[in-house]
Image (cartoon, rainbow, N blue to C red; front, side, top):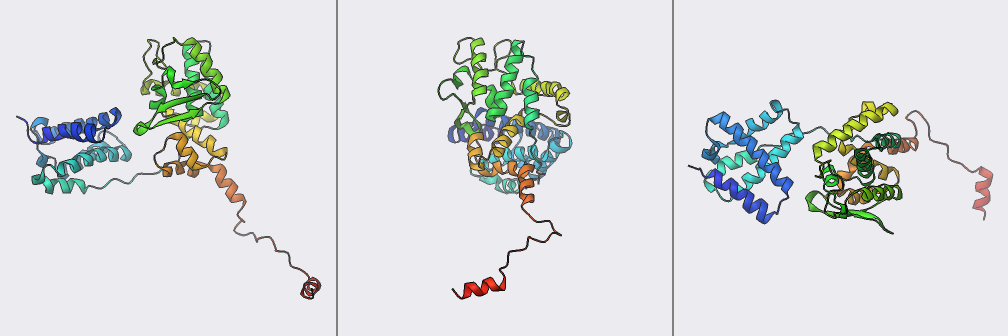
Length: 331
């Protein structure tokens, strides 16, 4: 027999996430994963089957224990813990209007604070490192040409890995104003212009691809779209190859997101303002783009050059001679 929790949780997905929020597939999958982990933890902690659990069973102590379990046993970062907590808060907020008898338990759960996280500087590639990475794939093979374009496009456009792998052949427009269209986080659609060297690579690649408009731009050998994990592995592999030519890469953890950061930093170094960079990257909040200002040592160095040293006197200001002052006073 099911408790009141099971249908309430089902309605949360079908009513709030689907009907009201029209949440993306990725959001629903992340929320579902959170609750699978929670219900499994709750069953081990209480001995009650997931379908028999009640809201009262999911009290603040159990939820707090679950969040701690994520960090200590599953080795999740505080940021991941906070993401799971956000999913739980969304459900308990929804439940607060539909299960008034459990409002005391719900209020205590909602009062669980987020965990403070450490802000780290973003990792990006220098121009030499980016060139070495793009040149790493063996372009005498079909897979090597695919990988080279993927790395090049990732650095030039700053697309997220999910956006890269979702690109289709008809996402690209080649012409007087060559561009690509993508649907990003929050299902925001944006158009990104392509540079001339990018257009050459894309044109050559499209000539190799079957004329299927809805086919993936970056397919596997079987024709299906690459996965996030596959892109992560190919970036790691080519970064290791590139490190032989560019030793500074050996000390960096190069991931698909590093390509996005590299694009942002190249735009910043070119003098593009952060508002325009936010639009380019598809950031919902311009504050997100501020992380690149903090990471840019070049800007900090240029700022330092304009500031006098602590023990250095500022240049003496010109003072007119007394005779000149007297002359001016008599005019």
